[in-house]
Length: 300
Ligand code: NAD
Figure (cartoon, rainbow, N blue to C red):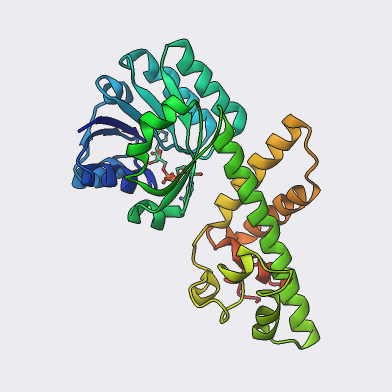
């Protein structure tokens, strides 16, 4: 049984910590929000009075926080209390530069670190089917792997410091761009009198095939489990897609990469979010492309 510290017990962190308890580990946790602490306590997490207390005796420390600023502030606060030999894992989705800084901060204290963002959403966090994209040394990866495996189904070592965050934002940039492409194709098909099912039957087995079409189709019907069949309830909320597209743009600017479609996708999702759709699934952007600013808009 390992001693695990978990900081950030929100929508994702709460169920992830609960799966570590189910896996037979002792988890000490901390969150600024009383409601998150109460839910985690119900699941068996021992709630500490501060983030520092969580790391005192931990073999593995996991953070699951909103942004890079939160992560850096918390790591700066708690690293001085970390015990020798501990591994620190940040599973939040944050910018690549901040992720690299966490490795540096930990290294200065002789602590090993991993950036290990996830995909799979709250459903995956609850069902322990997340995908972890991991950056850091092989030794740190091997130390944390059995713990991550209790919360996820696929654990991929992507490379050195920051490689996990890089993989996450590159993947989500593909998803954001390809969803817009698929949505545009369905809106054009509607104008041309081509049925959604016919377009799906052709494109799903032709060169237009992609995840946004075959797993997450933005119109109701062809893929029964897609959010389009459930009023565009997330799924993956537009606010989170916009966050990831902005992180991709920040990384492109910092690294000199040319990503014009990524930039356009970020702008379109920003407009869609600003029209009141932040908490709609990101595939709902098809309604925006049809000319309805919001599916809950009384004018539409
Ligand atoms: P959330 O807002 O539900 O949880 C974040 C928690 O961090 C909150 O409970 C908040 O109180 C806590 N927190 C903030 N500052 C803190 C501090 N200084 N000390 C202790 N606790 C603090 O967010 P979430 O949905 O759980 O997402 C967490 C991370 O995972 C984000 O980076 C997000 O982008 C990423 N992510 C989310 C999803 C998803 O579907 N929700 C999917 C993949 C990745």
